[in-house]
Image (spheres, one colour):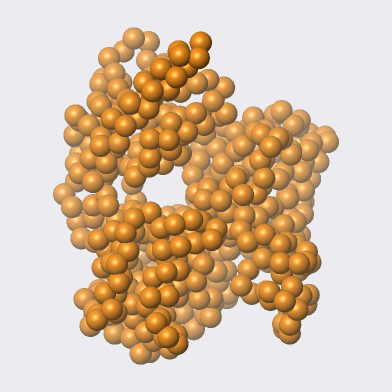
Length: 478
């Protein structure tokens, strides 16, 4: 038995190794991004690929092996396909359950008909500028750089910051290279000190030093028709953010914070269909609003929500103090690493901007806690009909696997998971099935979310739509 287990592992390891160049070629030559049940396999290690396959047993109650996905990957490599996100795991399970002896290539041609034989000529890159380089800005940079290897699409062209004292460029590069929460940067990073730029995985990124937008002409750096992603939070209304549009080379603005006034607050997957070509300034709402809105939508669609309360247990942020000091906000002046701090959140009310049918039905509050990342939203919902723990959990599991919100809603069913297990999770929110409580029509849902990375992925999804570089997700879910 011992030798058989080791031999099986070595066989699967060898297959995973042979998958890596196929995955890379599909990505770089055909703009095909592959995954296994939503877990990315592009630019991942052998162990990462094997773990992605192992994950499937938690979701489908059946094993998935590289023996199942390798033939699909090989067939895809020999097919003419257009750019797409293709889930190898879901294709493998569907072929196993529904293939009925059908030829694999014929099965794939039917499932991927939307992109088979429809290769697209490379279009122009779309320029992106990050205005600000804090926690969200650096994660956005990592994501944009990682996505740049698949051909024409979003290109991070510049980062705007205020010049700091000392070796500013070196320190900015170091913060991108090393992260205490999210780990090291995946790739290589070089400093071009003479031209004040960073070269990250071949991406040449100009560092523009400016105190405000009025000092910037992006066309001087070869940047045109750019999407400016403002992650400073300094301006949150149309008047303030319009300053970016006065810069030569800037076309649209995306704010990584809740917008004020009449700005559209977009939660991708929920109301991104409201984005018009005429919209020059958009908000990506907040991390908490993004985490809870998709789950609230599906619960309201299926069960109806009479009322509810959202309690956010949120990691501390730069807005708080390390040690007790003056702060204009109540309680936030107390030491963040030492205290739980009751504070307010606008997330519950903000849900109504994306889901108007829930306007006035939700209340909300927040507790800041001494963790650096990953938060939780507790949704106490009063539904219009009674249900059970099993029914709710099965419903949300299906939503995470087979709905249009599969990139927004994740689901976990383990009694051992804790907050650090969700660092780097790309979904907006993750339902903790073991924590679900149901009493008739009273339901408590516990939703984890990486308030930095999961939110940043939602921001990038909006950016891709605004810039016209969205990929279809296949196989299509019913």
